[in-house]
Image (cartoon, rainbow over all chains, first blue to last red; front, side, top):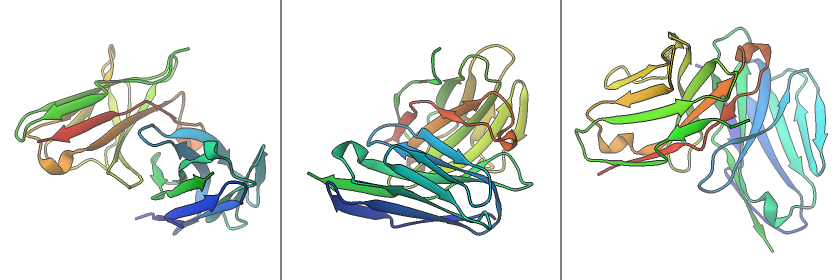
Length: 112
Length: 116
């Protein structure tokens, strides 16, 4: 079945440092979505990428979708303590069913 | 516009009891998805429903688990004869139309199930 791998599993950064999480799918994706989950909270939608090679920015967050539509990354510039949480990518398989396949997430800790 | 609502937020059951989890999608949304999240894990798809129809239940365990989304009322995820391994957070998400049309899924706050 479809697998979505996400690395790293954990990342500790000093406030102000940059952070990147990577997502790789075993199959070509129709689209990829990114979510953020705070401790004890629920996944909150951040963005959706659809086109090959697409890059989208939200303030300090930059999202990329690979040319082959099998990988993606989320980069946060100059992290802040409010960025703490787990970031999940979720892929929708091209031509497949309607289920999102989630990566295991990257848990980000920011040291003030 | 109220978001996705789930209740109860926390549920404690003893082994062998039944657990019923409810999900009311966002207004105007007719598609509901259930996911399970174990501690320190990602979300695992369980089932996708539209009103009165199960569209995809490929992620649902074959035994003890069932889901419905009736014409009126919330979607229900039912777990019979719960075991300790069922302890997890169960999230419901809704969308207004097919996910393949690139529509976002909006998540509810989840139900944390603890089986003693």
